[in-house]
Figure 1 (cartoon, rainbow, N blue to C red):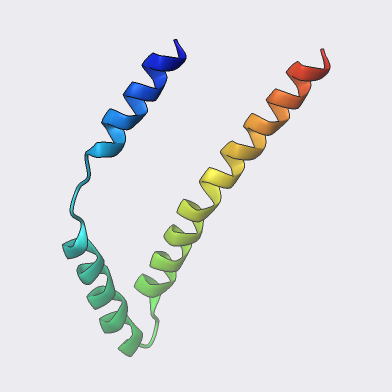
Figure 2 (cartoon, rainbow, N blue to C red):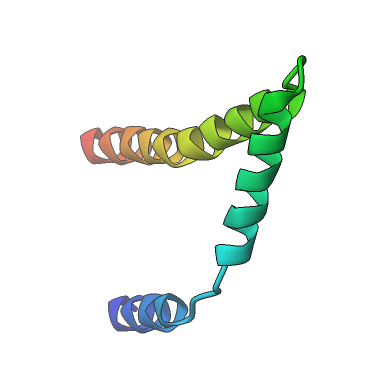
Length: 73
């Protein structure tokens, strides 16, 4: 089973998608919204980035909690 998981992770990790164009588009939107008075788009981008940043830490915390709970039992 462990061998299957390792092979699966290596197979998934070997594929990558080039996403340079999206980063440039987001940068352009953020720069153009910076000139506007309300700057709602820039705040929305920042909120989205913070949301994406927090999700792995929350999932890791839940996994660690479940692991310690299972190990104590």
